[in-house]
Length: 272
Image 1 (cartoon, rainbow, N blue to C red):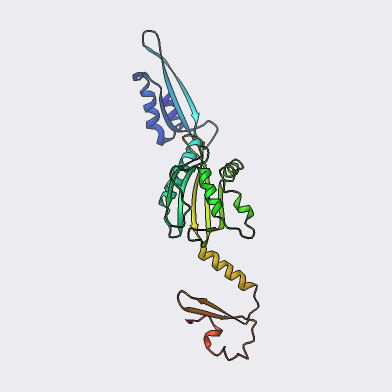
Image 2 (image 1 turned 120 degrees about the horizontal axis):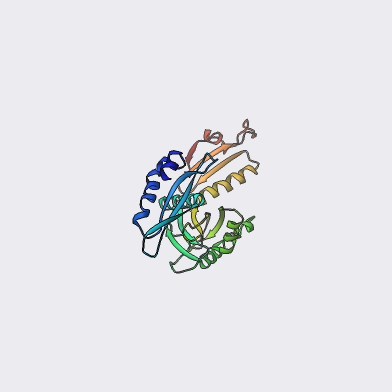
């Protein structure tokens, strides 16, 4: 039978050796044996992943009189395992300059499985605290801001579990946060939700980034768009430089005494 199924291309070429070994091991063993193989179900073009279990049956004299074979479609399980494995590799390799912290939370067990802090502004997270404790500390650091009420909601274990069951597996939240020095920063937190392949617990991969420079730039651009100006000066106090830009609608024919330099009419940097 094994060779007939192999010849009919029921078994994928990559799984032929595993498939043969399964059946050749039956007479020599006394325990059930398992193997995962790629098979092509009859009437279907795509291959699926099957877990085959062969259980030997013995008579009262200890002779192997027959074997019972069963198979289970584990295609979805394997896809979950592969996705989970890729996410672990991705989060372990993640190390960008503005990364504040990254971790893995077991929402079902209410346990923090992994936490790596990269910047001092990270929320303090001891190894023995629960997910509920972590989210409570995170919530307490969030500063009030316009239109931010909806973004606060996912910062709880129950809310993330609810999001998972609704099919929302990726959440990206931007919010202002107070740090230990009582200064404020803008943070982007990304949450990715998965089934654990081993326990079926709901796992959350969480990463937070400091996006203060990007958010500040966005706020400046938004303010400039709403302004009615003849020319605009952008001053960088840290580098002691400026850039001046003329509004296209401004009257350039009559510059004032303060508008005598060429830099005022173009994107030319200078010193303050």
